[in-house]
Image (cartoon, rainbow, N blue to C red; front, side, top):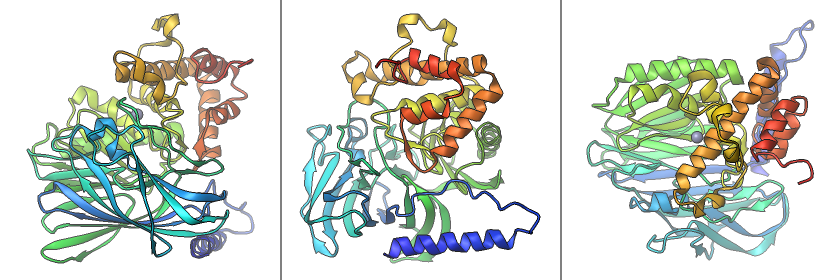
Length: 471
Ligand SMILES: [Zn+2]
C-alpha cells in the first residue's frame, strides 16, 4: 500500500545512509525509537480569508486501521465549550470515502447547544474495513475564528493576526484501542487523543503581505490566486497542526540543531530578540534534562489575546505575558514537546501524564509557584490521576484541575526526585520518554519505567496518579 511503501523506502534509505557513515570499528548507530510505520498520512490545506476572520479547509487522509472498523470518527475540538464560546467553530461541509460521498453524523459530545456543530463526527462506512485495509478520506470544512479569543483559535481586533490549532477534523483513532468518543467538558484544558500522523503537506494560502507560521519544516512558497501566496510545510510525525498568519515580525535562529522561529504582531511587551533568547535558554536546559529535542523545527507565536501558553507538536502559542511569568511558562510549554508531543497521552483520560510531567520539568529548570510537596495538606494529596470529566462538578473546575493535576502531580515528582536521587530519577524519566516515544502512553507505562525507583512509585500512588496495590 502506498503509505507503507513510502515508509519502508524511507527507513531503508535511512539505514543505508547510516551504514555509509559507519566504519568497521564503530558499533552500528542506535537509530532510537521510530514512529508507527502505518501511521495516517494527512494533507491539509487552509485558505485564510483576507480579513483573517475565517478559513476554509480540506483534509485528505490515508488511514490504515490496525483493527476492524465499520465507521470513521473525527473530533471537531474547536466546538468544545471553552473554545466555542469565543465565537470559534469548525463545521465539516462534505466528506468522501474512497472517492464516494459519505454520510456524516454530527454528534454534540459536549459541545454547547448554540455551537453550530458537535465535537464528534461519525462517518459510517458502506463496507466495514479489515485491519490493514487502507481508506482514503477527504473532508471539506469551514473554520470561524473567535475575535480576541483567549484560546487556541482566534483572530485579533487590535492587530492583523489569526492563529488556529487543532482546527481541522482530528482522526480519533488509538492503535489497539479503536475510536475515542469521550465528551468534551467545560474545563480549561486539552481532552484530545491523537496518534502521530505523517503531515505530507500543510498548505496555507493567505494574502501575500502576511507572514505564515506552520507546523513542521517549510517546503517552499508559491504565488496563489488574487494576491495570495501558498506556504507549504511537511512533518514526519506530529499529532496536531498549528498555524499563525498575519502582519508579523519573525526572528529565526538555530538552537540545539532545531530551527526556531519566533513571531509576534508589532508592539509586544517584550522585544522578539528577548523572547527568542529565552526560548533558546529554556530549550537547552530541557534538552540537558530530557534528551534530544523531538522536532527539527519549532514555531513560536506571541498571540495578543492569550493569557498563558498552549502547546502543539513543534509549535507553541504564548500570551504576551509579564517578564517574571515568562521563563516558567516557556519551560512548561517547551517541556510538552516531550510530554504530549514525543510521548502522547489521552489528555482527557490521563491529563496528568502530560501536565504533571511538564510542570515538573518546568519546576526543575525554571521554577514556578507550585508549592513544595511538604506544604500541600495531606487531604489534597490525591486525585492527580483523575480524568477531565471528574473536575466538572467542582465549583471552580479549572482551578481545581490545575491545583491538583499540575501542582500536586508536579510537586510529587519533584519530591520523588529528591528522595530517589537526581541521577536515578532522571534516568527513569528518560527511559519513559524513550520507551514510549511516538505512542499514546498510559499510567502503566510510567509504572514500568519507574520499576527501579520505588520512592517515585510510592509517591505517585499516594497522590492517586498510579493505582494502589490492591486497586
Ligand atoms: Zn501544560
